Image 1 (cartoon, rainbow, N blue to C red):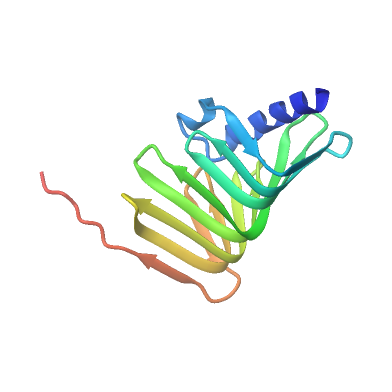
Image 2 (tube, rainbow, N blue to C red):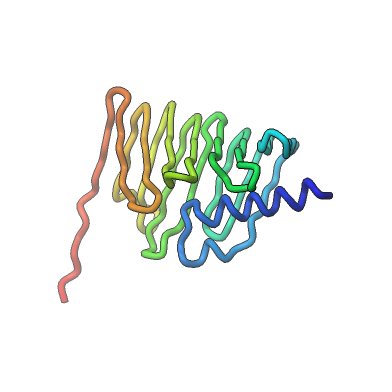
Length: 166
């Protein structure tokens, strides 16, 4: 029971900073998995088997998620892996961010999401791509909206946007 309380506190700390938008921070965090192992001494919580994490508009689907936290229960890192781990979030400006990769690593200290191995980052409006980046490695700054793609040959697609006349 004590481990479950600590886990809830940890997850609240994690997701209060990750991809936080005005409404998402205030939402309840829900985790579904086939198995959970929490090691409070090492500061690691591991979820395996069809893992789904949601908070507000944020959703992460992965085969495995590992949460690393300090003795003070501050989140340092979240690692999601799978036969394509998937991240989605609806932004306040009605855009959607969609990311997928074999491995996703969120650095809570730097507010960055690192996608590696079959990495893809998309921005969409009304389910239509306005920006797509495919690369071996994509670094996305969640606060600044900055994207860096590298690690080999990259492919970026930017769709023209039509400006409405007043």
